Length: 238
Image (cartoon, rainbow, N blue to C red; front, side, top):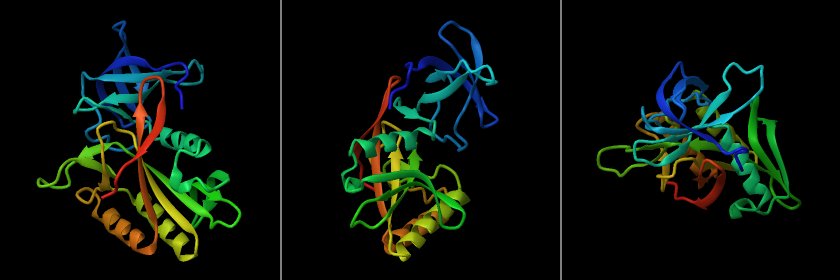
């Protein structure tokens, strides 16, 4: 997907109140921007580091700028807007860029299912089992323990909502459907993905149960620039 127009550069001063951050534009102007990420954003920002913002001229908006990309402590770029993952994956479906799911001809986003939930994508095709795809954004590069190398970890904070999503996918496999958990890696420095057992051990246990029940795990990284985001290649899930 393209950022139209391309994003504007800025320098991070601080993030606060979860949804707000102060930035300095190249002109020297200090502005407050909307932060579209409700998570901890652990290891995803550096005060004084480069960031990239989108701009809206909608007069009803309180903050005209939205934080999209961030320089992380390793020097890589990360997309911190979690809403972008579904847009990138949707474009990848249309372009048949996910070979494991390329046999489906009907792609429906945000479909109701399970216990009052919405699945990110419901895929269907003649002579194919319906496939329920839940997309998760991965931006945390971290070590599970001191003996392991840094990996992409999900989630970046304890998440009851994420627990429910895994349980719903397990229920779909038990009903005979296909279920896929797709990790969309929005951090250039991540080369593999694992459950963040050091942050949310319940989620890690649920993920093991999901694998045993037949839920498929996929991870794809994203090519990131101030001009565009594009699904790139499959990564291993540990």
